Image (cartoon, rainbow over the protein chains, first blue to last red):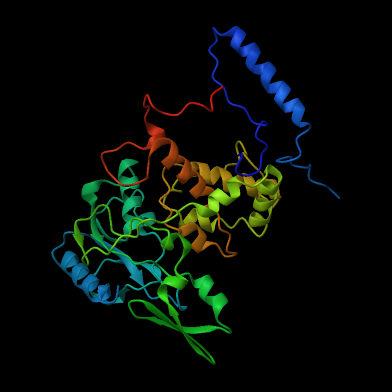
Length: 52
Length: 315
């Protein structure tokens, strides 16, 4: 995805067990911060088909 | 590769005569120059239609999927690697295929040649290392090395990795190639330039799926792009759908692609979609030390867990 031009921090991947609540919170916080810093996504956004 | 044709016909006749196979898959002359087509020979009478030259770029492993009969197939280096893939993925049994290995010195790029001469190409003939192209008003001689398909110039497995018999002695393998220079160049681009680069690369795509159909790896009974319940993606030419198709198809080939070049060769508008599959090939090599289709005894990189598998992408 990065090779195709998706920003480095746009896409995240993690592995969190159901027993790792703290890690889950950490990951979610990090992801939201990173994505918020990038601003709204403009790539890979499909516009609604225009109907005449 | 001159002289292969006669030997191939000999081998095909022998195999059909002693009934060790029911069908021989090879090439015959196409109706246009540089367009050889796959040929399925089941009787000795049809054997003379078999030929071999530098226009046999189609990957014959594509025609082995789910076959039930005993088949002999002529296999270049890349074809043989795809046959290995097919056997590993249970698409055909090893004892069902009689693999006739064809040492290969590369296939020529018809699009490149068409771009190098003026006017319609009427005839193309070749010697071991030259290609002669005839148009209505001129005759041009090319070195074969300058008109090879890009994947052939980067090929490091010209000789079949698996075979029951060989058409000729192995050819010398190419060494010390920088196989991923173009991929590296893209990797070094800024994110926005990458996006634009692929936007431009894929913009001519007409979604004909020739790349998918030519690919020996694309054998799913229903391709994800053809599904309608659920419909995974739009079927039109919206740039986002085009992009989704190309990069998802590349992902489906991750760790399996042998860079045979069938997709690019089949593309009617000349898109180099191999940039995507080769990126994944490069990653596989760097991260797992894996090259597809080299051995029947090794499970594919994405099929096994090893303790030293890289995991840095998991946060």
